[in-house]
Length: 593
Image (cartoon, rainbow, N blue to C red):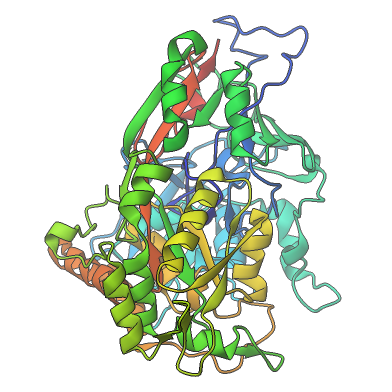
């Protein structure tokens, strides 16, 4: 699970995680001498899409934000289809032992890396043992692989030239779905694990940054990065060594190039799409009317109109720790944020029905849970999940119970007379999210709070949440999927995306005085128990309790679940739209005429 920078999601599986990318597009000129005619394997075809800001790393093991190049360049042992079902990828088959403690994977014969070198069991063993299971490497992947109360990790060993065995210390229900992490090339990266830099840390931590020449990036996925220009575009070309072929033996994917343009404003993307220069665009509620009206003349089809698999929310920094003698959060504000009645008051004060109507143009629904609505483990309000219906008077009552008071100007003060004022950040350029922040500012103003919007670059925002940890409040989203354990890195107190009370990750300066709250620890324990439980009824009950605790304590306050809607030019054929995994999940089958 990763932070994502836009609402519309095009997921692919990596570690069983749903990875998001926005498909705002702008076309490049068709390369001369190429053809898009059927039967030519579409040698000159391309799809041009876009992202809001530059990527921060090309190293899949270290990246936390989405989009990431992995959506195009990575391949794991397994993958996920449009129905959320597990399918073979680099592994052609697997066998689970009767005691559920072992999975033996058999690799496809003749696998190759993009540089032509063989992809073998040795690469799989290296990827897991030297990277994902290596405590010296700060990767979120490890959080999803920790098992039981002991938080032990699986063992991975080579059986023979094509078989690799994964063994868990205890039964682990999401075990198979957790083996979709990108496999990385041992012949390129092994020396970066064993070689230390001047800081004494493995050189892997600074390998495959965005300053890496594309030719040095060796991958196993459908595409490889051909070139990139910072702040402008990323060009991917079909990987001729990708394993997949169609029934006639033709190399897949069919489309030769994918281009990501850096377009820092969603309004600009809409203008380009309407001008006929774009291949696909996510359709947020405030743009749906105009996009729907012009679909015939624009020669595109609109796909999907149901809740998407991700979440979006507002969250306060609950970390009471200090770094180098300086509190991460102003102690005065920290006392507000860590008061559950303060957070509940904020939840009651946000007019989510208004947000659905005005920001999302009724193409969304109030969100109350971290678990995707399509998941069998989702707990609905009808089943007992606590919700916070808009109620300004209830919000004021809770604040007064917590010791807050109002002055003659109806400004909210704490018990020491300090004005309640804080910064609310989100990523600049996402107009829908900017509108949400503007409404939250208005709504919380009605209960006397002063909210100062802070619109910043998405990468800078993620750096604050993951590294500096110095922030007050944010609006953002996380990718989602059908398996709740893929969010273990969010809900474990030690997880890499446990942003509301983040523990420093490997290589970061220590934090003094961090407090793990009892409810926070309980959610982490329940996630562990649920991952060990094979009885589906009991497993659902455990995840139901995690959702109830989340809503009672509100480490994050869920806002609106927008409908996943995508417009795609009719020249792109083969679309098999999935409400979970988007319009392009079967990218290898698509053609561009």
